Amino acid sequence: MGLLGKLGIIKEFWGFLRVRKKWWLTPIVIIFLLLGLLIVMTESSAVAPFIYTLF
Figure (tube, rainbow, N blue to C red):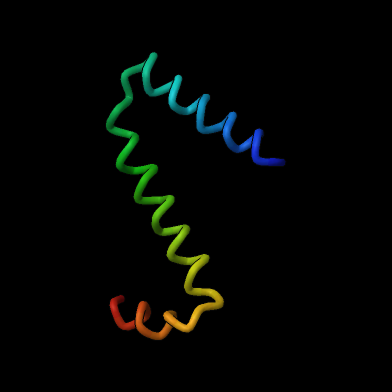
């Protein structure tokens, strides 16, 4: 799945939010994306020990 496929998913999700007025899903998705980014960044990073102390 290339970059265009990922952008298509984002565009489809945005259309879903606009048409069905499900704006309450936006913060949930953003939190999931941030947590996923945090997990990916801590796997092989020198910052990992400092992030683990936060939790």
